[in-house]
Image 1 (spheres, rainbow, N blue to C red):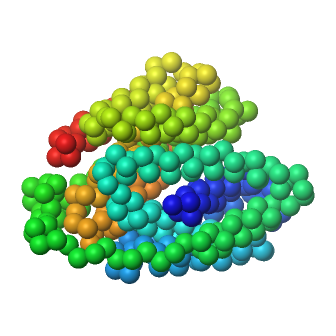
Image 2: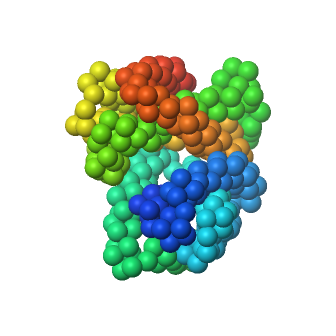
Length: 378
């Protein structure tokens, strides 16, 4: 379990590491920041496209082999990033790094599927979220440290070395044992699957992933641009830390709540907290309110996302659950990217209230949808 947490933390750290280094990268390569920022978009694209592939491989060959292979790809891409000679290579290598670290989501999900009861799975996901939030806070510290030493390159070398060491610690995962006869029929139509069979189940996974990504990933990504366009440029890094602190603090509480609360109560708490943060940012503009919004969105993410991680893959039978987890994450990533692209111009025009009010309404709708699904989960 420690190696799995390290893998998740390194993937999250690698994603957050690039942003504080953009200015140094642009200066080193004598280009503008928008060019090197393309590496961050390429990272998300590579991750989103690779997730379904790793999900299929994890279901077919086991999570251990899939995880080791993906982390080796990520380690090689991080070595290349540390030695990168220019922006063209940078974008290509960041795409490869995102594709490599994408293996973590379906592989970890399949490992955690062996945990019973559901409360144990959710506590494991909550611990994983705590670790990734801590890595998001640590990444700017690493970036600042290497920049003080005079070069950005050691930051990615550190990621590469730690990723390679993590591969060495991961043991091969065995395939799940044979399914008992009394449960064999669930391979045709699992009890939790929505009426209509697997096509509806897959559609539900993709739809919930897209809705969650638009709100719980898209809105936090808009906090820094919202501050910048409102004249709070000095606080753009702080608001991201505030979001990570919200995730970190709430997951510590969530581990206790997961022992006694059912999925409906956890989903309602997460959805209501996220909607409250978005609507507060829409109604009361200002730097302090956006900081509070960041904390509330981080709290909402912890409760909502870990509950969906725990229960949503069970809409499909065991041989397809890694694919369910990967499709859920892929749709969330793509939806969040689309949300940022579509609303960035609205923020530039000063229409903050419309953006966050729309996000709050979508979060409320997402909460209602998840509560409807929770009726199937008990």
